[in-house]
Image (cartoon, rainbow, N blue to C red; front, top):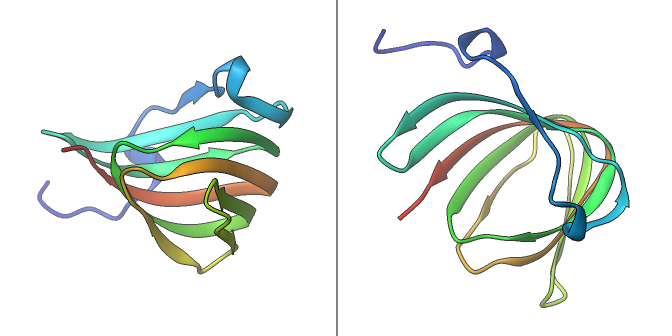
Amino acid sequence: MLIEALTPSLAEPETSRPDAEKVLAGDPVHTTWNVEDDRGLYCGIWQSTPGKWRISYDEWEYCRIHEGRSIIAGDDGSQLEVGPGDAFVIRPGFTGTWEVLETTRKDYVILVR
């Protein structure tokens, strides 16, 4: 198909956790439905249970939150609290933490260069 609604039914869910050395609080469990994987372009749905972990981005990512609340905090002192309806971009070079306050579900588009 050349056009589809983005739903979890389009992909098998993959379950993961952040690397243990990156976890700062809780026991976050991630579920990812990766719908698109084409030459460094990824698109799908991601969900995480509460917890906090270190993040470091080499890729560009666009996100739109559908459920839950999270705080993304940069090592540079920046902070973004996001909830349902919020959209944002994380650019390559960003380092900091992702804290899921309430189980969060987002759509994502990732570009790896």
